[in-house]
Amino acid sequence: MTLFALEPEPAEPSRPGPDAAHVPGWLTLEQQAWIVDRFHEWTAGPVPIRAARVRGHEMSVKTVCLGWHWQPYTYTREATDVNGARVLPFPEWMVRLGRRALRETGYADAQVDAYTPDTALANLYDEHAHMGMHQDKDERSLAPIVSLSIGDSCTFRFGNTGHRNRPYTDLILGSGDLFVFGGASRLAYHGVTRVHALTAPDGCGIDTGRINITMRMTGLDG
Image (cartoon, rainbow, N blue to C red):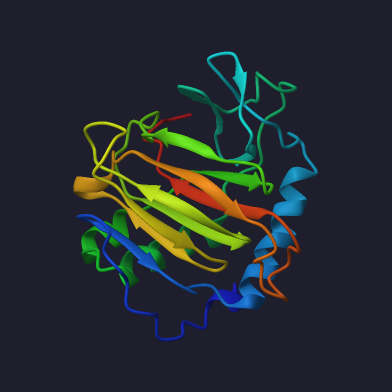
């Protein structure tokens, strides 16, 4: 994918936790707009975007999945909680982008080479959406998670691995930002406390709301 072949000198990452990195403006506006176009293709089916239900309550964030379909506490190939259709395959360009993310945030060459994400959760936040503090622990693999943000900025709360309370760090994730967490921070609690409406930059592909894409390795077969 030539759009991602050009790799400008990345900004120096901030380090909100061990093995965690935030890189502002990692994606260009052109790259962001191209990914937004792909997002619209994903939401067109075969599995439509939907708000998952956690413990009987509908999330304020809507999600469409690639590779594997996430529903609370499990992954399946078919969206058994939506329409039973098989989700779209995980794209090869995203594998390459995930490896580049690890390389540019300081992960060792062996970890970069071994990183083969096989699922992505593409989340859509409107200005009222939020996500409570949680751990990403439905995967068998503890390989790093790569997160991309496009559109409106948000306040992202990145915490500790023991519980949902302090200590935590509140960060502003803007359009085009990269956030990676693995290693000692892989099971850190994290969430989104607020979306800042009307902060999406012109040219990013989305006028209002926030798209967040998280790549993961499930460690599953089949």
